[in-house]
Image (cartoon, rainbow, N blue to C red; front, side, top):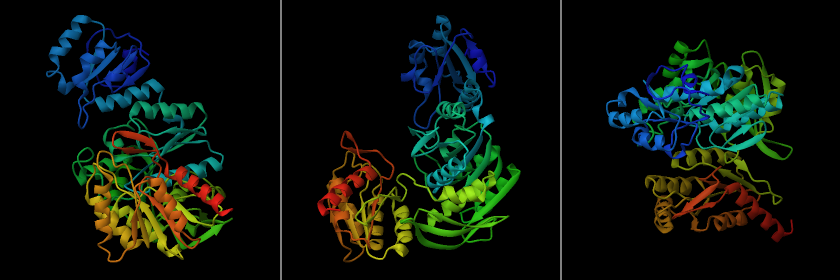
Length: 507
């Protein structure tokens, strides 16, 4: 594709150079520039691509796109490039918007032939998207998935870099899904993805708002809570149907914004008094798999459902998924069937074993999420809750004290271990966690630095009445210790430990 064709949907001013150079990729990182590459000089939170224009040109970029506001600042570099006449340069009002427009143009707007379901919210996005994906797939609708844990294209699982990919990768994924015959795509839409216009140019059939907590307001993410909130609201700027959880902070603000921007607005709530609700929630099991039963209440029918996930908050996620599928035209029979097969990597992921032990891996990695998790597990636990976790190094220290305090209070036994200690010594991190645990007098615990050995200790001491939770890493596939990055997948390691224990016990 030629530069002049690539920019046809964008507002731009041509600065210099040939307009007919061919290119086949758009990049934001000058280190990835090569021949037939378009380089977007993006103004980031901590970096500015305009500093690397000369480097990109030297590597053979076919096109460089810059921001209007930077023209006077980069004039000396532009003068040099004008003299060379080897690279095309265009200026645009908004490089992020232009990047998304160019990606849409290059891949031919694949989303126009698909129904895109987008979920935003502080918690619940990952689990809910997996449930929706399972239901749609088992109903016979080929569905792609984009999110934090992984991306799915026609049954292939691809590694995920961002919750919501940058525009080029996003459109590339949608294009691949379309080529494989997918008619639907369910995706997590992060606040930063919306703020940075990664999904610009895509129309959402359904936009879902799960909840809003005081999170992601820090250096490198959102400057203020209002910036975080309004970034999430952008999901409703281009969607046909909105679905909102009534049990969220600032519900009235969310609902009001959606009513102004969306033609159809629906609500859901585990507490009733919404378009979609639930009744009769209780722990249960099906074919030996533990989970939750509940009655789904929709505008047109009620249906008994089972989801193979524990914890009240997963029923909230299941309700949201069922409501989403209803609004996308899925039958109640297909919703009921698809719901029973759900499995989410690293989110209350049950680790199968022949010992009769209840062992789960979960991503809970701060005090609040661990507290919610352990409180939710307690009603279904007939014995002890044994919690294994650590805290990351080079991260805020408060998390260590609060996670320790929560585990000491809400668990019956805590195993403190390693989790991405990075440049810090494990003894320093674990010492702070233990201080938190000791805020609960006589709370039992042990410290085992080796994470595999810590997991082994927890499952070995467990009985079938107990519940073991390995928290903190969830779906993550590596662990960083000092300057080394090693593979470590909690679910895989825990499964290996349980197999060894089965052999030892002759099971």
